[in-house]
Picture (cartoon, rainbow, N blue to C red):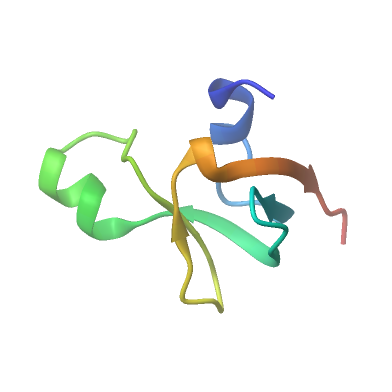
Length: 68
């Protein structure tokens, strides 16, 4: 998956599997402190609502959108 495709999933329910096998499910979002600090919508970190994880796109092994 390309980064542009991944960024198109921001705001949608997804299942993300990180490079270490950790599976996180929820709504994908930009981590606010980065987008506010650098004043643009392509921060280095993403998060999943309801979890304390913050991760970079390079740490994502697999992602799929969950239809609800």
